[in-house]
Length: 145
Image (cartoon, rainbow, N blue to C red; front, top):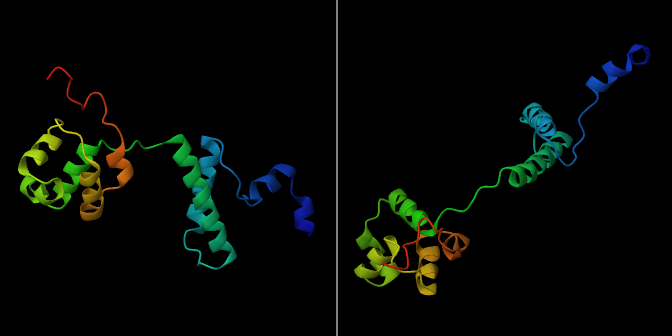
């Protein structure tokens, strides 16, 4: 107790624990990340484990707001999933209905139908929110084609 009384205010301030709260700045974000690093080996169900979980939620909320990630273009998402699964265009015929439709969709000449979207969600696991969005102007073919 004597030692605590001998500490200056600035010394006490540095040693005070960081309490979880909403993160509103880059400096607070850095401090939160440092605290997570300190708590990283905390066991679930302990006070430190609960604190770690709370910090992770707060960091995720801040990062989602400050560093949003746009959804990928629907066609790019399909092409990415094809690459991941080592799929060829012919492998998509059951999803799209015909070889011609596969080609037209992948070349931006045909919009995805609701049936195609359902099949892509169910068979390739591409999120519906990605497939339902409008394609970007740079990716869409011009109307004069």
